[in-house]
Length: 294
Image (cartoon, rainbow, N blue to C red; front, side, top):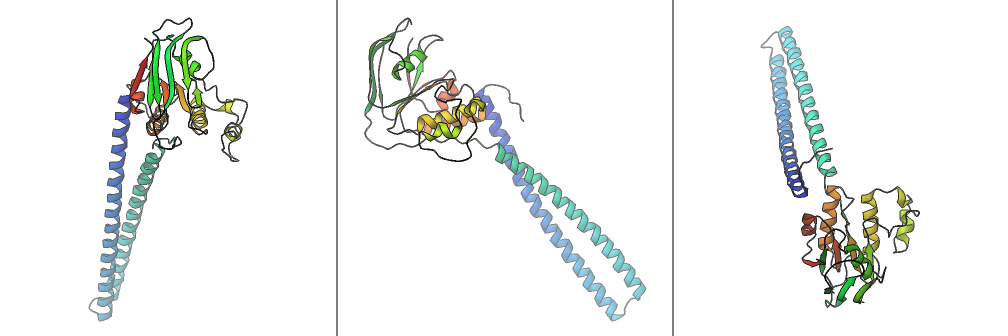
């Protein structure tokens, strides 16, 4: 576990530097391993050369046999010690290398993919005229949402963001003005109300075409991040290219999962409206338009 100080942007910078340092260390250890292998090869070649010279001298009778035997025993002891030392060094280096490589794998970004949708004419999916929520003091809102557009909805706390998303999702009609929906709408609130907590992952996914035999955990036992991933899969893989309404989808995520979600949203080709208090997350998700209720 690593402790990072600062905000999300600072975390990304620190994480990136850490990964680069780990990568450099892996390369260095790989080079060290090659150097160790070369030294082992040289030592073996030298030992073999000395052994050949000794055998040649013994055969020629140029030196007494007792002296040659002593030299042979000494050489074999030195060679054996060198081999043990080289083996230990190579093993230590290999263990360090494997540890660093596994760390790089473990710390890779979690992956989250949203379905791609068909490219076509960017038709208007949502039309809002003079919307005002009952009992909420905000300016009238008029807007158009077209195919492929990613928009952020902003307002002060209690300023009607959730009320607007629920109105678009037809969850209440306590508003003035007109909302025209030309596509299905999928609403994901910050508590993941879309997920039936008393059903398994399999049961939750069955309705949108997913099958499998390893997803029998009840959804109520999932973490906040796991519920988000399940809910995002559910809202993004339904038919007829729905408008995604996302209310603080990053709220319960760890930093790695938040980064993965931002990347997934950035590549999502459908239309969406998002509410989030994290400016950096919104920028990473490449949400370019902003509507305000203030």
